[in-house]
Image 1 (cartoon, rainbow, N blue to C red):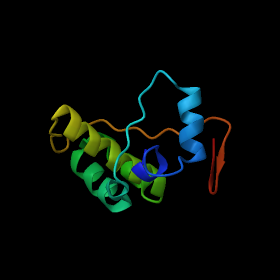
Image 2 (cartoon, rainbow, N blue to C red):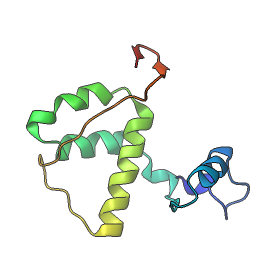
Image 3 (tube, helix red, strand yellow):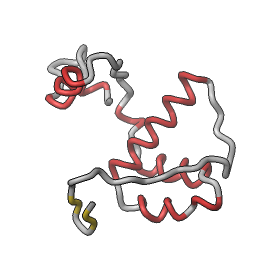
Image 4 (cartoon, rainbow, N blue to C red):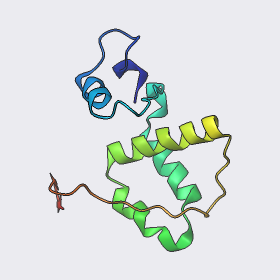
Length: 107
């Protein structure tokens, strides 16, 4: 979660407080807001997605929050676990949430 939404940087966001209450057994890790980048997420996914799973890139191209979150998660895993992702070696799936509707897509 972006550091600006967490405790220690002023008033925590409602989302942070709700997550902390609902999943109290999970650590919420603050990540600098600049890491959440649509462009970086798109670029990184294009680099690491295996050829047979490349169509997922077209599914998420217009999904700002998905790409931003992907950039943050991948950077966090790289830094915290000292992982280097091999080019064209990862399976990536996109799944919408059940019982939700997004403009243009219903699940």
